Image (cartoon, rainbow, N blue to C red; front, side, top):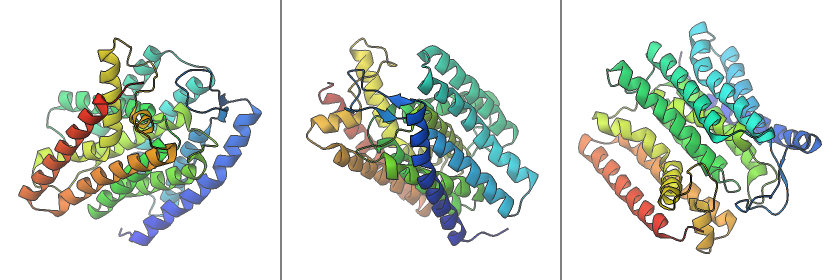
Length: 345
């Protein structure tokens, strides 16, 4: 079945409206049940309590819109199972995140649960032969996929430390994923990416600085599994394998940069990587003189640059696509050095 660009844009727009309307309702519920993030720790940037549960709205919006689109389009059980292989693991990890938001969980149980979910996702992708760029070795594919899912989950979660920062960046990444999926006629990836972009933009209306609601771990982990799975399933139309493998990394270059700077900085100072702090990219930009809103725009802009690099790769010759990846990698390395050398706190 052939789908038009307008259908996907409409799908994303309807999801945006749905989540945009749902988010203030989740905010009211969070206030009612006292599910709020209080500035009780030194690393908290807000001055007043901010409600959680924004992530629940994102998850409900993405899942509802995705299954509604399946029912409206040419429904098949194969498409239902393909969509569920992405959505169900994301929902499961989101529930764990919600428990963490409401009750608080220790880092190691969280990591164990994430790893278990990642292995399940890897097994599903390999058994259904839906890994975009498989290595040909099942054990290696399971290890790489599991590492990628856990890594992206934590990167998105770590990155959610600035009003609108994570939501806007995921919106940029999922929009680029939509373009790549649509151009490559990978319509399931395109549809789920369009829904994710719409949901995060709808949430961003309420999460931009000053944020009136947070997505919490429920939202960050949901989006982490979702984006990780979609990037693994994406098969970029590139000339050489290594530029194909570089495409997911480019799409998530900024969250990976943030996690790399924070984790290495903490390790260097003898601090646990799981301990929060003011050593993320957003904190460093603000200490450098930017406002919170400008810092968010800067991170979105960086994400947009790397996303455009990823989009450009399949549209160029073999030599040029390798140059694009090399230049992007060089810029990423320079950014890492500059951010790492800036003051930690």
